[in-house]
Image 1 (cartoon, each protein chain N blue to C red):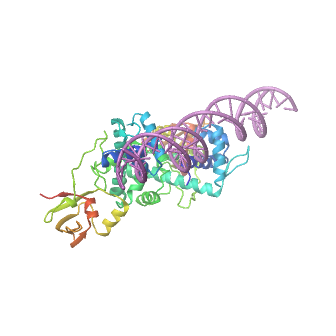
Image 2: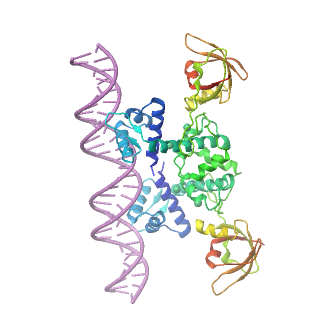
Image 3: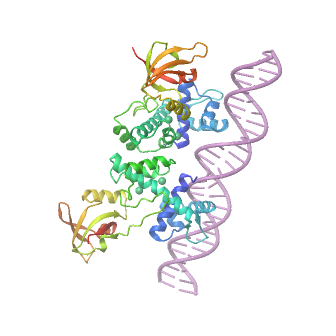
Amino acid sequence: MASITEENYLKALFNLSNNQGEASISDLANQLGVSMPTANSMVKTLQKQGLCRYEKYKPVVLTEQGKKAAALIIRKHRLTEMFLVNKMDFGWEEVHEIAEQVEHIHAPKFFERMDEMMGFPTVDPHGSPIPDKQGRIQELHLKSLSEAAPGQEAVIAALSDSSAEFLAYLNSRQLSLGTELKILSKESFDQSMTVAYGEKERESLSQKVCEKLLIRIFD
Amino acid sequence: MASITEENYLKALFNLSNNQGEASISDLANQLGVSMPTANSMVKTLQKQGLCRYEKYKPVVLTEQGKKAAALIIRKHRLTEMFLVNKMDFGWEEVHEIAEQVEHIHAPKFFERMDEMMGFPTVDPHGSPIPDKQGRIQELHLKSLSEAAPGQEAVIAALSDSSAEFLAYLNSRQLSLGTELKILSKESFDQSMTVAYGEKERESLSQKVCEKLLIRIFD
DNA sequence: CAAATTTGTTAGAATAGTCTAACAAAATAT
DNA sequence: ATATTTTGTTAGACTATTCTAACAAATTTG
Ligand SMILES: [Mn+2]
Ligand SMILES: [Mn+2]
Ligand SMILES: [Mn+2]
Ligand SMILES: [Mn+2]
């Protein structure tokens, strides 16, 4: 059984590989807030357990076993976040820190019961997919709002940044998953976009924000 | 912040003191499944943090600070057990192991929300009192069934043993908290008691069982 | 390309939590 | 009141996780 520390390294490696294609020691160290020698030595430990492959000075690669282990931890994390929001009335900006702890609980039935109670959700409160019990992840092929064109209509389906700060920004603008946007115009100078949604007739969203909103465009 | 290990030692010390009046190093080691030198050295560590007092060859005593810390962990444990039973449909025999892990989560709001959702319960699924937010415990002055006399009627209010084995035994006899018992007779040879409850006209309960059933006698 | 910077590695040390072996004190039994 | 048993302590060692300092490799820059 992997320790909590090892589980957090696995998750970090998994996320770095998905977001950047590969995981360097320095990225890993940064992500986890440890020194490079610490990350280096933990990578060796994970390799001994067959969870990753690694050669000096090369990027770290998770094995299939490592990927599955990581995905199953992420499954527990995302089920927990969804449970906290749907069944315990937490805000989407409050749940990550709690899930970061709950994901390490060893109690399969606890998470299965959450899953059942929620009717087997496929995404978490930030729109990220929940891996299945085999650790398989259904890829959502979403575009970012930046890629949409004036005149199009779209619905917010997920976020590429789920930091508390970004979520607080979205809360302050009444933006949430499911919000339907009409794209009015795009400023070519700074790539900011003007959109309409809900009660808002004209809201301007910076490029930074548009890139982080993942949408499904209406046909 | 006490580590998970330290928290488990605090709880063990608290329970030993309550059940036996004092906590020896060997009891503590036994309770936690560690060697005596290990318990001995952890006691020194806790003392350095002001959580217990201890002199060589004397029993260990929790300080007020230590008692409060222990009670607050027990609060999280018992709220969790009650939540699992009341809101997540677990059996009373399944929840202890999960609560043993969840009790170490640092997220005050998580436990407050559980508490609210359940309407601020005062006892856990095994009838043990839930300490309040200040770490105060309301003492229930219950008798064991062994102390009751033939002719009396009583209700099962708590258990002095909540092991999975005892709970399974109770399940198999349809005995649970709230079950109303009529005491028909007591065998002076082996202290076993014959009782009636629910559909059962005559059930015999051994002394071992009677001692572990804590009851409230009807006036 | 050579210099400078960034990234990665090794070595050595620290802390937390655990163990076993050996010994010492206290409690119990003869 | 001894002898025996139980309980408790010390010493020394081990693993896991982390750090800093020093150095080495790889990459980027001018
Ligand atoms: Mn999260
Ligand atoms: Mn975590
Ligand atoms: Mn319990
Ligand atoms: Mn515990």
